[in-house]
Length: 417
Image 1 (cartoon, one colour):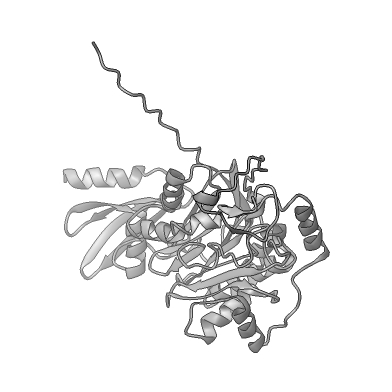
Image 2: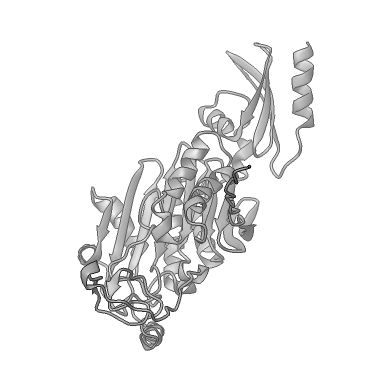
């Protein structure tokens, strides 16, 4: 009796959140009373006289398997949903419109992600997505994109795509028309043309102006190192640095390059329907003045994005060369699988990267299969993203970024005499 009182006290005093819900279920083998918020639930099993505290991961499994007394409809108000990186509301609006073409967005998540991101490519979001954006060091714009199906664990991606504007749609064709995961460069372009896409220049007058100004500043900034002539003060072509026996010494100052958010506004998008079908996608034209042929994190599953219907999904944006070394979106999904909330999961990869690269800039959005979401970031003051679900449409939110990791000063011990 004492146990029942304590458990019901927890149930009735659970703090109200943005989405508290009650459930009472009687089944042949189980009867329970449950109250839950977005992150925790308390459940009393009447037949076995036991009280359980359930994490968000436990709630996910419970609802999925239909085992205990959380009413499925209690979480439906968070689904369907579409969420994307940065303040790109037009893309989110397109995805949300498509999700609403069927009840609860059922069988529309792939369409929502692909067409939502296509909208961003067409609008040239911040000149970081789509054609006419940031030129590489040869003055050309190339595109990277990926789409992942969280049910089949299948991926279609393209990288270094040339002369084709519809990168995410080509990635979809890789997913649906081939057994491969990633096609690159001219071969990806040839594939796209064979699928009916039109070949056309991705360079615009704006691209040419950006490239001309960069060349006039001796190709500063750039991404070369350990080569000659000195990339700090001149353009290429470059050769490997001479051996120590014939070392050429350069002492001229370099124009230092600090990568800012405007250089890597990759769009990453996640869509989930009421049946918990999940798709994630990304698209970008990469770093400004990148070395020709460079590919970042966006088209790499587990780096730019990741989806698993059993758990949720995550997308990332930021310093792709650094972030892809840590697979932050895979880390986020696996953290949710192990019971962490979306907020905790989004921070896992960010904190791990920060440990090794204290000045990196980037962000991760994590969403569990119920539609609960959060974001974490570093190297910026704050990070904006856009979300739509039955409670809010095309809603822009921001999250404050994690502070730099405090440096620890090691003081040597002095020998006492």
